[in-house]
Image 1 (tube, one colour):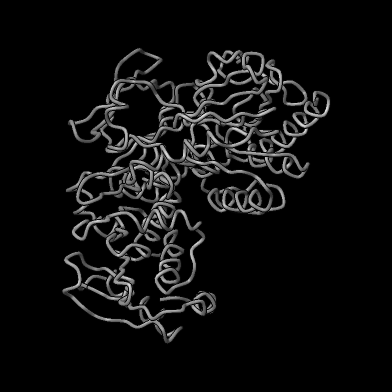
Image 2 (cartoon, rainbow, N blue to C red):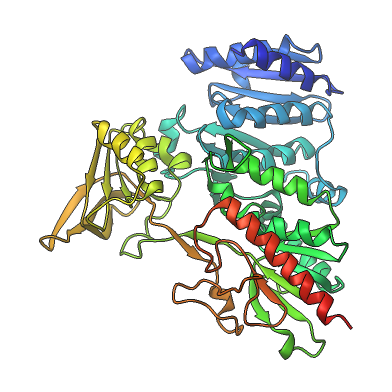
Length: 526
């Protein structure tokens, strides 16, 4: 199942095992089961601490492989074949079940261990994924770590492509979708801390209290994308007290699949780049506060202590002498009837994540820019048919992408098309309506999935009453040093008026804004 290079690499990882583990198989007669058996045998051949056990009664769901530590009574399940993006999840499950230390602080480990305190308390976690989803491994690995720590938590990854009957029965239209004890718990990317905040009702309150006790920063970065990471590194290298508050580290990059224009790196993926950024930031004394959403900025001119105050959704307030705003942007929505009703029920924004759920079905892509045409090309290899709807009379995508799309027989491109409504049966998307802008005729397209790819919206709603000047598009207006019109407040990245929303540009702008803020601190120090 594994080629020789992968075996050699995995063998080196398995040298870190301290405890015996079992790979417990419950199989059927499918091709996936045969491959899962081959994978288990390959793993067991690489280290004597790993053994394979065939036990059809171990699970009603088949085929499945469970990574079991009998001494700790922990089990981590993989229903389907954990390859693609999920192979890393399997490797980590092996290591963590085998006693290799996790990259978690002791407080988090103790918090996980304290869940389900009563003897009969149990968390049965089912995570539906697609192997092409770059967001899914974060969720799978978070729950897997919890399962390896706490024997009353059972986590199972379920490949939707291998269990399509379950996907249909449970009406799963987006991945990752998580069920806890049979009830929908979450959809989309979630970090370990976000998951714990939902499971542990007192966690968010404790975090807010801890944040309120923190001393003021010299420079506070709001946002954890490429611009925020660069700003914090440049700040910390100056030896000043630096903090980051962000909903999630990596920002929009975490939703980006292929990156081939990051100079000096021929090709990478968004989550990998985000992980590298976080690792780099953690090389310095940067106070990283994630799962924290900024809700209000109060300028230094309006505070008694002369510091900029950033209020958070958790109820905490962070104070700093200077601030770099790098809250980035998010996918633009269509804002048509039915979009919100059928979000994650056929309306999606990530073709890499959710595309496999629409295998053999008809889909639509809204938008004819690079992201839209790339999405159509990706989907064409999975779905029955793709209809691309473009508002304008010309496509904005690169010609090489347009040529590729036109060469595929199951892609249809309709220009001068204004999407007017998402249609569904109450539980899932069944089609959409659009207006032919040449004739004003309303037409209908039968589709099961709609992928929205129409650009980005800056995350600046929270700055509405802050005094920070925004452009007509909602972007933060900045000067040559990244400064805003508010004293001590700087901004960088996709949230600003700087043209060309690119990762490498955001990083440069983050560094520039940080240097601008440092220059401000020097000239205004008392």
